[in-house]
Length: 344
Image (cartoon, rainbow, N blue to C red):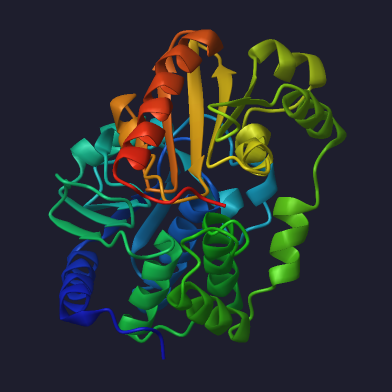
C-alpha cells in the first residue's frame, strides 16, 4: 500500500478518471527537452489507461521534433512516441505530465489548445495551473510517484513494463536517490515498483553507464571549464554548439552535465549552460543547500523546483552568465541576511 496523500488527491484522481472514461482519443504529452521523469511517467500513464480502458486510443507525444533521447530508448513504449507536430487530431482529452506551464509543451501546446478537455499531473510549483483538472503536488519527489499512486487508486495491476517506466521516472528525478527530494514516499514507491518487476540495474545501465565516447569527450571539456564564484559557493560551466559538433555528442546527452558541476566540494549552487541551435541558451540550476533557486529560474523565464530548476534565454553563453550570476549572488546574500546557516 502506497502513501495515502489525502482526500484531495483521491478526489482529483477520480476527476481525471472521469475525464478518461468520457474520452475516446487521448493524447499525453510531457515538457520540452524531456527527462526520465517526463518520459517514464507519460509512458506508464499510457499503459495504465490501456489496462483499465483497453478500447481507448492513447498516444504519447514528444513536445519537440527531436527523437526520444537515446538513453531512454529502452523504456517500454518509447518506440511508439509521436512528435506533437505530426499529431493532427483534436483529442477528446489532453493530459500534461510533469509540467504545469503550457509554454513548456512547445509543439504540444498546439494539440492541447485543440483538445476538448485537459488534465494536468505534475509536481512542480504552479500559482496559476491550466486545465479542467489539475493535480499538482510539489511535495512529490517526481511525477512518477503521483502516476504510481494513480494506478493504485484505480486498482490497476502494475506490470513489469509500468514498473520499469515509473522506477526510471523516480530514480532520475531524485538523482539516483541522492537529491534532497529523496523522501520516504519516494523510497516506498520505488520499493513497490521493484517488487512489481522494475529492474534498477537496467535503468542504471542505460541511463548512467552507457555513455558514448563522444559524450565523455564533451564531459571532459565541461569539467575543464568549471569555475567557482563567490568564494567557491557557486560553481558553473558551459558547453557551446561548437563543442557539441566537434566532439560528436548530442544535445540530449549533455543534460546530465549539471551534476558534474554540482559535485564541486564547497559549492552550494551549480549552474550549467549549453548553447542550442537558434541562438538560444539553456541553463540548468541545482541547489545543494537550503537556497531556493526556482525564483532565479523564473526570473529568467524558466521554472522548476527549489533545488532543481532550469531556464532558456536568447543570446550567448556570456549573455546567460551575465544574467544568471548576479541573481545567484543576490540569492546567497539574501540567505546570509536571513541568518540561514551555510551548507557544509
